Image (tube, rainbow, N blue to C red; front, side):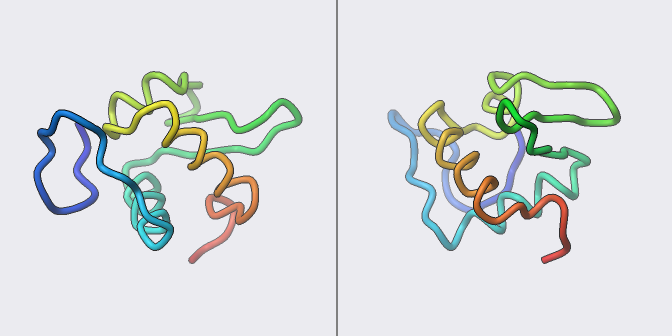
Length: 85
């Protein structure tokens, strides 16, 4: 599991990800070599040229399906992986 924010990683429910935390998560993903590419059918994940599934990204970064949907929405609006922040 990747670490990108402080606090306990063990809880009975998912911690919310606030709007100001998205850039920190995305920067940690970039630093780890993860790339999100916007394609005609949605956001696709790649690392080292290999395609990843949403499920594997969720597991690695400890986010749930709803958080992944919100992350993809953020990526579609801001396209942070294709520009430097």
